[in-house]
Each structure stands twice: as C-alpha cells, then as structure tokens.
Length: 261
Image (cartoon, rainbow, N blue to C red; front, side, top):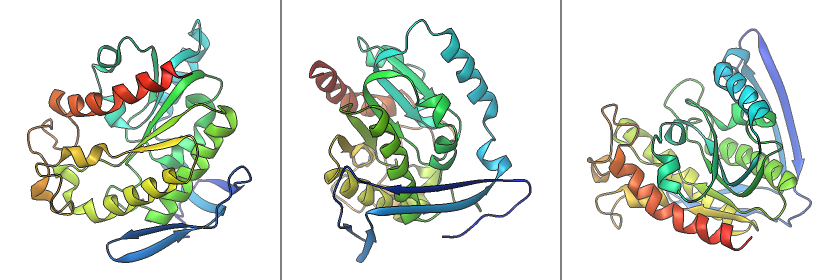
C-alpha cells in the first residue's frame, strides 16, 4: 500500500482478522477486471497529521455534545461525511425515528477510524447508517479501491464488535456532476461494497446511487447520465430533491429494522 509522508505524521496500524465470519475471498467484477480482498486485513498507513485531524473542531464539538446528551439511546446513528452533515432536514425527514448524527465535513474513512471513539463509541442505536465518499476526491490524498474497502471493513468490524445484532446500512458513493470524472472508481468501490455486504451478516448495501441517474438502466460511467436537477450550486451536494431520493429509499428500511428490534 502506498504511504503518504509528511511531517508531523500520525501512524496507525490496523491489523484485523475477521474471526466471526468465514471469508475465503470477495470476488467482484468491475470494469472487466477481477479484484479480490482477503480474509485477513492488514492496513499499514502513514497519513499526515494535518489530514486526519483537519476536522478537530467538529470532533471536539461532538465530544462535548456527548457529555451533554441526556441519553445516547437512538433509533438510528448516522455516520459519515458532508452528504449526511448538510442534510438540513434530516430530523424531519426521518421522523418519527429518533436519530443521532455524527457526521462532519469532508470526512474520509481513514479519519473516521481515527475519530471512532468520539463519533461511534458508547451509543445505543437500533440501526446504523454509514456514508463516506471522500477517500476519492481526485486529489493527492486519494487511496485505491482496495484500500477503501479494507478500511471500510475495519470500521464496520469495529461497529459490529461494539453493536452486535445492530443492522448497518452502507450507502454507495453517489454520482455527482462535480466528480463525474471519478465515476469509474466510484462504481468499482460500490461493487466492492455490494459484494462485501452480500457475504457479511448484518450489513446491507443500499444502491441509492443508481436512483440518482436520469436513466438508471444506462451507462453509469457517463457523467451526462447523472440527474442534473438534484444538486446545489457546487454540483457536489444535494438539494431537497436529492435528499427526497435518499429519504424514500432509506427511511422504509430503517423503520423496518427498528420495528424488528
């Protein structure tokens, strides 16, 4: 795996054997290529301290909010990046579900692992939603599709260790006009998400990205096929129409999961 070097650095080595599940391999066909991830995850990365701590203000705010919370019981714990964080109507859209949101800025799965103790530990959810797309931005800090799926597996395994029998809903990376050039990588990662969830008990992949195309049955690598009416000015984040797509696809799943607990 590639290492990103800069000073100062924060080093985290994550070595995880998935003992609760028997994995031989995950086989995913994406773009006519076969890719594999294996049962034992070894992640050894050096990321700049500045990169993984760039949202410290948000983390410190959540740390204080956790202290002030009367109860950490909730129907749904929402974790992720700005697509969750900028969902201004999320509490109304998810009602009557009681939710706690622990999302922030342009979070990547790497710093979500780093910040796990604040954003994901010691809650009492009946379901969990996870969305994060910023390990692929087209910038110098991007990592590969296999690195992404390994890091998601680490994060989800931590969740499952702490929250046994709590269903986890993994939303695929959304297609957006601003990142149309990244569609091949996003589609590959979403295929890996799908295949990982298909063999992992308690994890369900939600293919909401497909609903965000004008013609979902057509080429998902073509930026012109992305709906143009569901974005705010930056063409990366969603407007009310975009969030309605997410609400309609996600809420029934959450209500069913919560009612079954």
